[in-house]
Amino acid sequence: MSASIVVAEAVWKQIESTRLVTDDQLSILHFLFGKNFERATRIVDQRGVKKISGHPSTRSIFQVVGESRRKEEYLCFPENFCACYSFFYDIVNRGEQLCCKHQLAARLAASVGACIEVKVSDEELAILLSNL
Image (tube, rainbow, N blue to C red):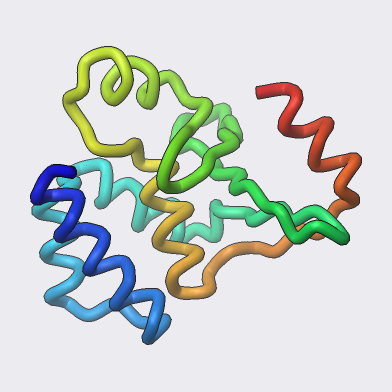
């Protein structure tokens, strides 16, 4: 695991424990993730993150609004995957980034409790996931 990931995880855990973000934490995350983090904060500020949870399992996935005029919505798991083009191109293919702005937005919104909560049946969640 790279030093950047270790530092980022420590910061995320601090944020999750307090549900607040300090200026120092914002600075660290911005240093690690750059423009992707700036874009992620805009998405969170615009209430662009939904946490979709299945019932009764409580399994969940995040749906994050993109920044283009079309306002696409991307399904993602904050720590592992996003269905956006950038995830496959910049992260998986080229290895240039640690994660995309949608993953960062989902992680930030979940950490501070800024997600729009959506409850669905486990069957509906399975159908949503089958379209990935």
